[in-house]
Length: 446
Image 1: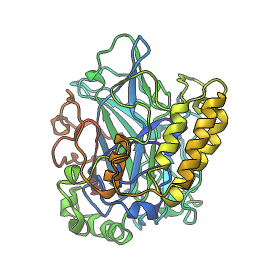
Image 2: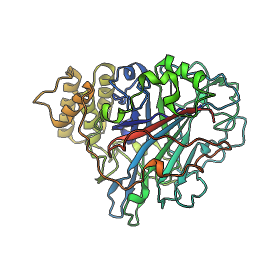
Image 3: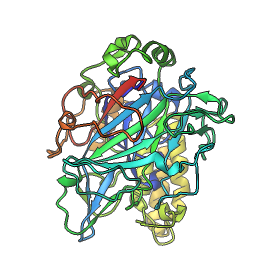
Image 4: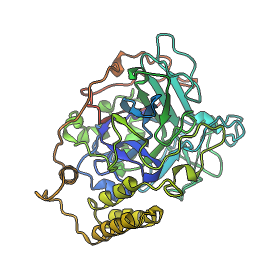
């Protein structure tokens, strides 16, 4: 069963601002403190199925030019496959509050030693890259080929086996991969089979005027081995529970043909669900001077460390700190409290006395403020945009033209790194503007 959520959403920061920016699709109110309950309160989803308020994250790609500047590489969004694979067909829906991450953002080389339990296949195979060209080459685990006429597609398989009790663990030990990565059996320690999620993101690498520079992901990874995805479940429980048995064996992947999805299908989702502005106050689009956040670019072969994402020790970044405080001023409740706590902790990295005093004042004001959804004439432009978006008001598209071909121009006959054949992804709606991120669903059993 393949469920491919079709969605477009704004470019948001990652759950941890210090780790750089992420592309997101899903609920309109995604932020660093999102929970299942908060996602359910979203006014809309950038997925065509409005009963899916999940959050999906992947890192954006930049090109570092020879002069040191960074240019955002356009992508046409994310394709999210929900695949009903595995020997055990008693597949369970994701429980409320469930979250998982696949891939290691710190990886800078291919790890052959860490194997999938019960298999001789490296876990590192979960990430791969496909250079789409007239004569496509074999998929690679790293970002080795970047001259790709029809784009470079980054791919990541998620874990499909759950221990049945923990909704999330930071080390992701609550989930495990099937014995064949995307098929096979679950280990005894993780006996509960889940839908197999598979992300694809297509980057327009040949849209860039290359000048001897290099491509780098937002967390400072020039190798591609650190590509990763994050999933926070926001599905309406009864809808996903009904779709798995009803559409798993008969559906060809088209969500329009799956009865449980029909009541919430919105074919105009790219226009009716507003684009949210970035939670980062520093530049993230177009040509920028540095990667967002406190990022040190690393190329391995050793893994990146926490120090490579940390502000301080000569890397103090007031923009990052102010981003956190500004984001908190536009949130309420636990979400605001969480971000204010992050800002207070980050304040220690600000060594300049006057800057530290000014930042303390901002944090105090943010902690005392009671955010209002009403747009005030006293608000700055970014605050007005945030509040209008939270109310569900449509935002003016600020898109940029791009040369990347549309998805249905591509031949997908070679795009699956498994022994099974997958159907051609179905594309709905019109092309999304530059700041939005398309996502597409398929729901089937290949």
